Image (cartoon, rainbow over all chains, first blue to last red; front, side):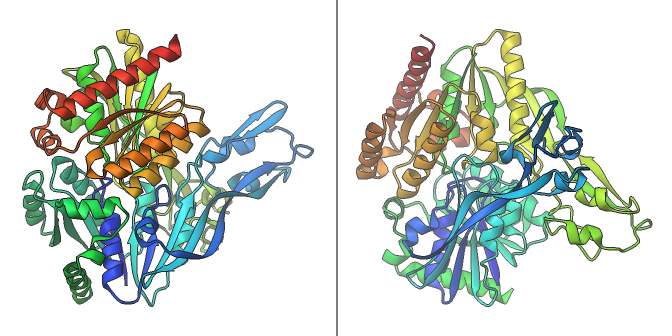
Length: 275
Length: 290
């Protein structure tokens, strides 16, 4: 069972919910796919047992063979190569590692070489197996790191994926293959606006979904009206409380201090499994 | 022309709240929303669209089954696992064109797709450049670049010399596209351990691109100790803290009313602090040009 936790808008409480699910249920593997700004480890404080570097393949032009014909640059869809009369420039951060340039080069002058763009870390914390990735600062492509993080998924476990914010390619890559997605939102106009976008992405991917309303009590009621109209179940409400916010600010998951919430997170999982 | 980008690393720290107030306060600026996958700024600035433009950011491979000889060379060479059982998954396809190139019978074609729209609008505070990436699409960085290009164009036409960009969360492709060539990165941080962790990565990003940074602590009173940690960290790294904005439910109320907080409750402590942050930001820009 793979359950992803996503949101559209950032800072709505994805990590709070993902970690809450992890700490309240047995046999959970938590996969943090927010490789630009991973935060689950801040709440879980795992002992890191393994680190694997993540590489991407980028073209390296063998100048002695290159005739500067320009075919590589002409075929590259990402403008990652620029061919001048006397040299070839490679823009690594634009390269998608598709390998087309090395295939089209008539002189076989392009070889691919590995470039380190991030790391995958694995560790155990409070009974939860955590896997997370870190994109090196200055690198543009999060997706290859997300792919490597997801390779660690162990299917026989209950897998919870913490998804990055937004609605573009890193989100699609992270939720792809999930059996269910929990969308965390806050009951505000921004929360609702970005929830609608996230719902659109998930419906395209045909992933069943439910909503968790975080900071319930602030804003307005429109998120609830929307969920009702769309037939989306509201699976849990977490109230806005200074106590929860303060615990989070110190890097403590509120379910460890407020035990009664563990039952609620167990119940969410049961509901998903039943469906 | 001077450019400021508001960023944060972590989402939901208050970038848009600050940018909307900045736009309402400062005169003579063009504002952009560079968060093209989940844009929110328009909800506070209520723009009227004056120009809409298609964004064709990427391509997708399309297979003509009637020509396919089922050699499966495409399937074997796709690096994105996008071709399975001779079907191309448009969601996984990154539009690189390798399959189309190697197909011996030319059964695959790369087709351009509309990935979103860019808009130039007018608000009561001035011009705005923004966009909307279709949900699930790629190339948000390219769309950000288009939004910023449109902003520069209007700024030149209107003789405006300041562009203010509302940045997306994270530190990847759309963020890098939002900070290229700017004069100041203004980081909004919340006093949580996650917020601090993400701010440090955002600061590193600005440093990586040699961009001057300024930090503002939002909802600082949710954890005063952490706010102090942020101040100490900034001091020892030579980064100025431009302001400490308190937590106030009025901010959410202003959002419900669809207004910048400066306009909704101009006399609140929050608004007072935001004005201070804006002054510091403008002063910082002035110093650089002087």
